[in-house]
Each structure stands twice: as C-alpha cells, then as structure tokens.
Image (cartoon, rainbow, N blue to C red):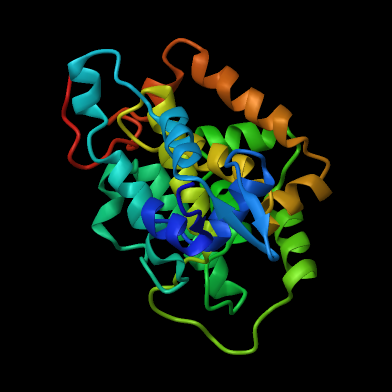
Length: 256
C-alpha cells in the first residue's frame, strides 16, 4: 500500500494552507482518513479530487481568455499567511475597477474600525459601499444596508484601539474568498472578476464573519447566490457591469 499523505503534504501540493484542507475535508469535498487524530490522504483520491476541479475551455479562445486566473488562486492562497499579498498587488489586473474599488473600500472600513487586517466582514462592507455593482444590487434586494452591516460587524468583533494606516493585509479567510471569486469567474466563463464574483466567493466560503453577518441580517446565502446567478443570466447584465462605459473594465482589457 502506498504511504498516505499528511495534511501538510497535501497543502503544499495544492499550494493552499492546512486550514483550507481541513475545510475541504469537513465539507466532504476531499476524502480523508483519520489516523491517530490526524487526517491522512491517498494519492489516488487526491488525483480524483483534482480531476473534479478541472475546468475545461470549450474552445481555444475561451481557454486563452481565462489564462492566468488559476495563478491568481494560487497567489491568494499561497503560504496561508495573513501578511500577503496586499491590495496593491499586480494580481488584481483582472479585477474590474468596481471590484478593486470594493476592495479599497474594504481596506478603508478596516482602517475606520482600527483593524490591522482585512477579513470577510470588511469585504462585505466594501461590496455594500460600492453601490453600483451587481453585488450591491443583490445585497440591497436582500434588505442589506450599510449601517446595519457596520453595526453587526462592530458588535461581533469590536473596534481596535490604535489608528491603522497604509496597506492592510488580508486574513486567510479573506484570501480564500478572493480565490473562490476567481474560481467562480472561471466556472462562469468570464474573463474578468467583478463584484458579483467577490460576492459569490463570500457566499461560497460561508463560514467567515461576513457570512455570519448576512445570516444575522436574515439573508439566506443560497437565495443570495441564486439571485446573483439569476442577474448574471439576464441578457447583457455581466457585459454591462464590466463595460468601459460603466468604468468597470480591467485596465488591460481591450478584447472585442
């Protein structure tokens, strides 16, 4: 029998942190065996898991359009430390202006609360404040208001005691949300990552304070996800939200 892999080995192989591996196991997505209180993994089952995650382009041009998005996932997950990368990373070149604006607003919300990190709760605040994107439209349709989110966030985690300036790092959960947003964009066949993908990533992560706040505000995460997909399936919605006219196109995009 082939030796079983440890959580650390699987994390290094997939270029994610160990916490993400545990989440995949707990969600039933990655098969594991408990040996002496620790998870162990079979290489064959890991290979099967990777096959299930594969996204095949329907045509060569589609694959070319999505080139590099998988690297973003690894960049956000890489190392699993809250100290990297920051919001000014070149990795955001495929994010729309609205999505990047939402991330900058997330940083402002963290600084406003004197928090020296950006968590999923700050990402949610940024999405609500960027009120012209699809994410804000969905959240408003679910009755989510900025003041209510701020009140909930401050009640749950409080306010820091010292001013925070400069670039604020992402927590591992926030990085996971961004990585999931990239995966959502790939799955939908989009060449950009907009506020709608960030919201889908936050809803899919489902365990952070951002998701907790939404639940406490009476939002059903599955309903919010379905509403987001419904809007994206409406003719012209995704294109309109990423159009240059609406100032929501990645800087480098000039494809027809």
